[in-house]
Image (cartoon, rainbow, N blue to C red; front, side, top):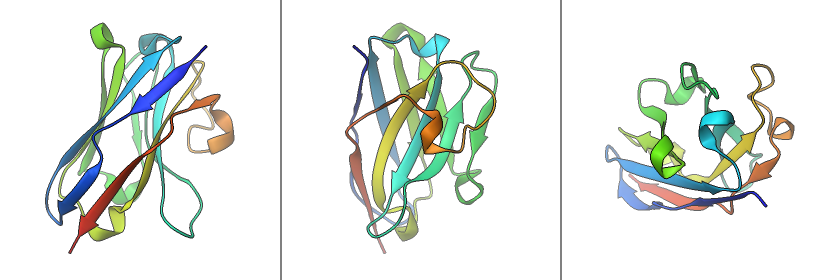
Length: 125
């Protein structure tokens, strides 16, 4: 059974940083496509970042490019989202997701098989 457990969320001031870990069990992150999505109140879940199974390719939503970084620790079977220069508009519940290795459709929620429970990130102005 695949389980993804996010943590690291919280309240931070604008301009601050947070690192969100996503610990995986039942699936090896180095053999999977991993991604982060977020959902703000009243809005649809949206793509934030993805990491290819090889670890050589990363993908980012335009508004987070240069501020967020997705990376993994194979030994811990954990994927991270490092978020810097946070803005109030980054406030959302952040979800980790995984699917078998793929190179297309990474920006769509329906491309992913398993999801974590989410972690709340609140950025105050």
